[in-house]
Image: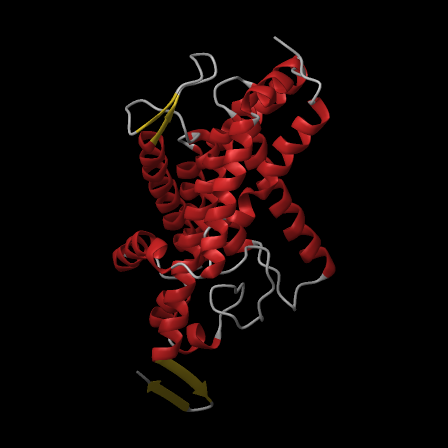
Length: 307
């Protein structure tokens, strides 16, 4: 394995590009954001809507049925056709970042392989569990099971979102691998367009990243009413989730299973799908709250429907 005099620069390029992947996801809103306590979809206690009409309110606050899956599918398919300037800039930055990684991919491979050690390999292999096909379904099962105890529809919504994110990410990854069919580093350096059995997008990195925006949006969004301890816990948990996704992507490079641009594109794909699904649910909540406004008082129940 040849060594390169660009080692410090190569390391900076690899780590810097991987850290950019969440910010390049095609989302309308950020993950780590602060919402008002009354914001839909970000509640630990019943909102006025849910208190006034628990059945209807639950669906407004936490949509998770077949209708919502259809809305999510339409949103994912049509979103690229309705990108704002910010979205177009993100696509350009994604292409540029992938291009930089492609330009230095052999140097990056040499640097990573030269700096491998058994302890790091073991740690990365353990973290890679996030990229396994059973990881998201396991989380979904836990979330759904907890809903039977908490009676909170948020857990059912989370369960469906996790499965959706895994499924749509897998489909997007398959399409990306067919379009950008690169060989594994151990096989060669060829990159073909529209070919079978390509590896241009890392599936493990994509699956690991796909669960992060879902869990972050459902449970780790900061609110003005959060205590200092709660805010610290949420930020720490979010940091661990993102670190797990990054390390899964790095593991694919470290194990010589993927080139650096493959891992980067996998991370961007997973983050983007998860973010867009979360945006779709937020859009449904906002549209539902505009259409139906429930209010309750002492001996009074009113409903106002607006179009």
